Image (cartoon, rainbow, N blue to C red; front, side, top):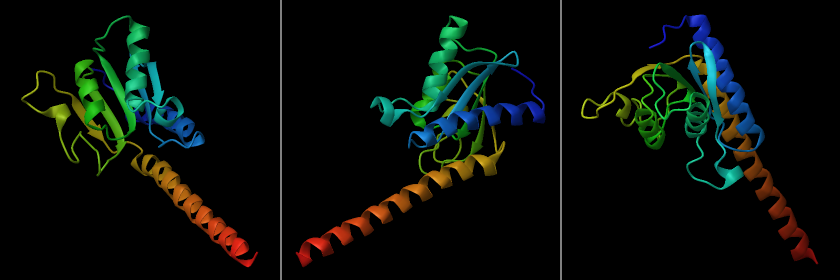
Length: 174
């Protein structure tokens, strides 16, 4: 397992945040991920479910696929996965199956989190692969991008409702 300094952890989480920005720009839930081995990024991913109409296109899945191709192996031993938001059940399962030994995430996911919030799949002793988990790296930044996304969504809905009401008033006057 890689021993990373706090500065390195912050740097790689910033890279994950750059991936999350890609999702935000496409009106996707802004979660980003990078996988690091030997201090090099070997996989990147961001949520792309809406873009490609595939439920499994989470940031972690995309990054794992790219890292598998980069190293030419399904096992990602000696790698560290950085993700802006706590992995869900599906992604936690994929992390374990890829044999990633370390996960570092920014903010918790109270509704879907499977690395300590709702479930604890990554450290469950009943499974044959356990993962070292660290949370809270750039937590405020990671939470802020999610808050921005959901605030923008509420604002869009409010504006759409306002426009629909205006249209109704105009049609009733005619």
